Amino acid sequence: MRVVFPTPGRPVIAIRALISIPADSILSGVHGETELEGIVRAELRLHPHLAPVDLQKLLVQAVFGGDHLLLDPKRFRRTLREEWVRLDASLGGAVPPLQVIDPDGRTARLHLDPCKGRGVSVDEVSRFLLSQPLKGGTEDRLGSLWAEVVDLALRGVVPFDAQTLAALPFPSSPAHHSSGYGPAAYRIVHDLTEPATAAWVARRLEGR
Image (cartoon, rainbow, N blue to C red; front, side):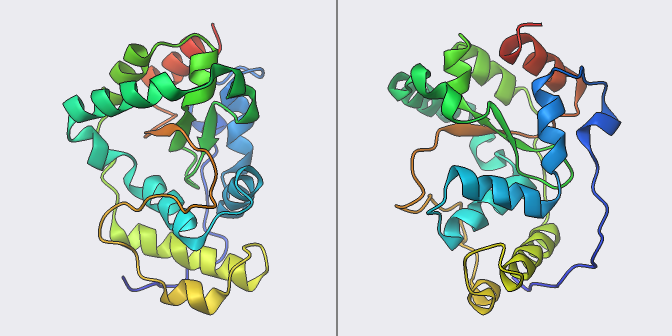
């Protein structure tokens, strides 16, 4: 994949500008870190020992969402149920329910421990996520975002060598997290600004 450095000052879209969000909503907190630098810093706080492959995975999910999983609903339900059994609902407070991963403010990781801790059932999560349209991202956008990560490395925000990141090939299929990444249990929400998605978040994660 050819990486092209982006134009500085690329505009981003805040979630609050796209949908009406109550001031005490979970979504009111996630819209503040939609610049890629804020997204990467948040990921580093959650996983301080991450590796470059984890940043690659973050951006692949930001651009392409969970399309490769949604294409097989039967397997999606089965693997989610298997993972759900292993979750510890008491650990839900360690991570936010939603973690925005795309600078456009739409795509996020839905962390499963907080969902289970809030009494959400695995079948509810399955139905919600499988009802999403496919995200349909492009390699050009992935290349643009990765170039921004390289720029963050040049500025010392990312603890990796910029030249190494610039030369790093993307895997042909979605990569697994590195051994140092730490515990992670999540699925991808494609569009937080979509009314049905915002309503589900308000109802099931906030009890509205």
